[in-house]
Length: 87
Image 1 (cartoon, rainbow, N blue to C red):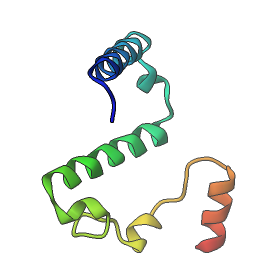
Image 2: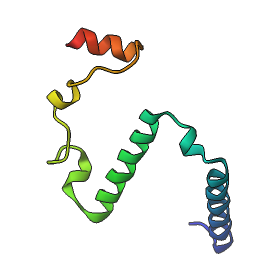
Image 3: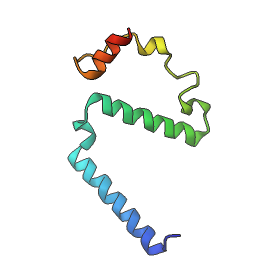
């Protein structure tokens, strides 16, 4: 178990990291795909905190396989080639 002094230091470190991220605007420099993934992870965590069953990714809000296959990826990356092979 951490001491009170360690907990205070941890809180200070978190606040400093948050301030640095705000200054650098780290999230805005990420790719759209990464930002979306972070948002989904945050939504899942919030759902878990609320106790929703939809936070597991298998509930009513989850995408079906046909919805995922509807549009191919925009680039000619490895993911795009794999998508083309599957469809």
